[in-house]
Image 1 (cartoon, rainbow, N blue to C red):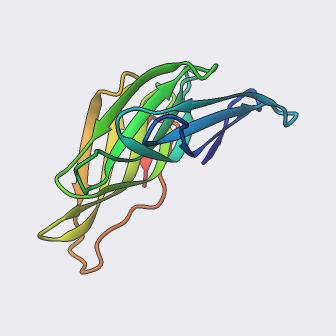
Image 2: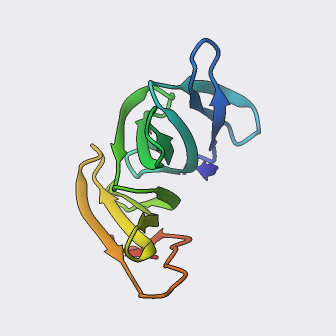
Length: 169
């Protein structure tokens, strides 16, 4: 995953096997506009987490989100992690439903709110699209599920922020 900062630098993220830890973690790197590596840092904890999306907020926080699997449980959850511009860890939070949750897109509005979309599995109606809006402290501001009633389910692919702090999926 990759996102560009307003200063031209690029942040990338990917899955990494962290030495000495028996879990899969996240690596984030900052590359300046000339293509030189500024820093690269690894993040891990007691769960496996694989980043899928990254964005930069208006207040210059780096937000990484992806799938997380807690040992002993078989379903995927969503993790969201915030970092400062130097890669310093700020906060990580997990978001779960009863079955699998998968994230496909992330963006931030001009106020620094974070919006995520993807899909969640429900036993009675298959895959349904979700929308999750968080503030900069990762507190849920809005959470919605959409079931269109189709047999294949609804799977949101992309989200973007409009100039009036609304989001389009």
